Length: 174
Image (cartoon, rainbow, N blue to C red):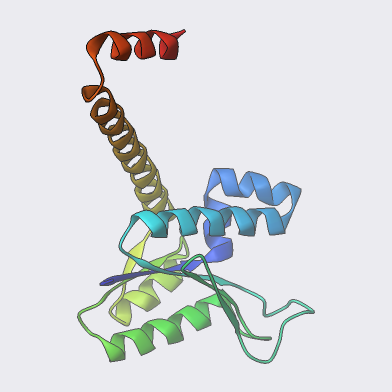
């Protein structure tokens, strides 16, 4: 994986209409929906993903960030008194020091944060661009699966006598 996407979780939720709608019901639902989207996207794309959520003012926040892997996606809750922006900036700087050739994209709508990560050598990606990538990935995966199903069906019927293949096709369509 030569590319890593780092998402400002709440910023993405607020800018993605489907996720924002879920947030009106329950913030946990919106976080889960975002993670589900990213897990599915990661499964189809050759990209590493880190989703960072602010926990700095949460009563449950700890003195260190809480990092967990879910479906190949890193989910981070920042430490007490640490914002998602500051965590992302530190992460970008560390990643850039380790590998200058790696493509690092930060997904946020925050213009100040975009400018900061650009100065660290990362690229920025808007939430709209991310949504477009996710949608295209889903469509590509769906088309690929349909093609595979079609090939499998034709492979089976190719070995049957024509009258049996026709009868099975008639049953399938009824």
